[in-house]
Image (cartoon, rainbow, N blue to C red):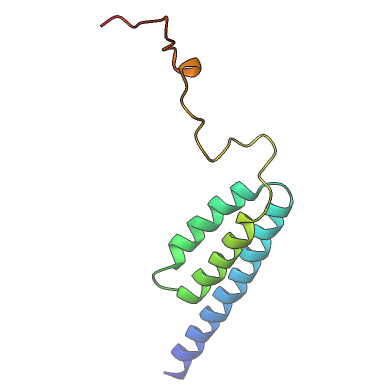
Length: 99
């Protein structure tokens, strides 16, 4: 029984250390100008951990909060949709669509 407990503790330690590396890597990717990509990866990791490893999931969640505060990637699309106006719909006052 001691061997099974030891192997469980070893697996837990390995998972904790792997989570450390993951969080550091995600933060470095975000600081390197890719916070959106890092956030998507973090979200996938959080989803995988949330049910069975809540402690590690919480650490990844902290990384997501850090990444959310970083400036957006250059050339990234805005997160909000542009307002719909007659100019970008093709429906101008003098341009009636056929029914």
